Image (cartoon, rainbow, N blue to C red):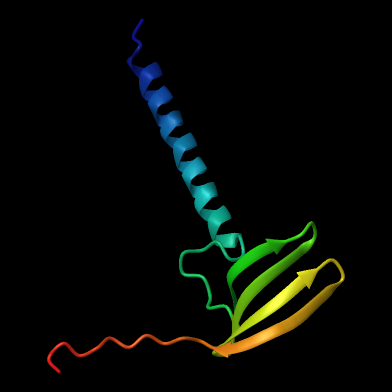
Length: 95
């Protein structure tokens, strides 16, 4: 009795299961919003957030070339300050 056909069938089935697992993970990643590598550009970005107290939070949000400091609590969101997005200029070394 030869075991070669059994091992070939076993290896083929293992490769099939591996291909199905990789394919399903790839598909799941593509279908999840915001998880793709080439995801769409968002209009609003959270730059930083800091918890204040039990239910409050301060957050810096970037929107339309502005940075907004907002206070977020359970039933309320307030704009505290607004500033332009900082731009960094590399100084000219030759000057």
